[in-house]
Image (cartoon, rainbow, N blue to C red):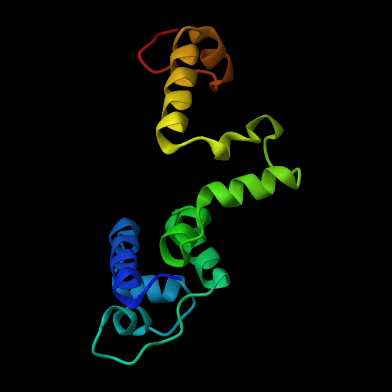
Length: 139
């Protein structure tokens, strides 16, 4: 778990990403209206940090991925979650082992996948609802 100052900095980032006020984010977490303000104020006594259940509610309300909130506020790396889910057979079985890659290597894989997809516009177009064209293309 991050130290208090590190936690407050991460919480400020989450607050900014959410686009909500402190009161609205407190409500999204299922907490009292002053919860976020109290967590961010270093002069106030420490309060209980958001639980994973709180973060799940905030994820649903804000659209910020649950695993991103866990990584930011609990310092649980997304890679670890992905690897453990893969080992349990949850998710994409072809993605097992991807967590062993560095961030730079995962970015290269994503770039290569985007390159391959761009070479096959018919595949992309076939999955789009009728009346929509692929990005940069026409039908």
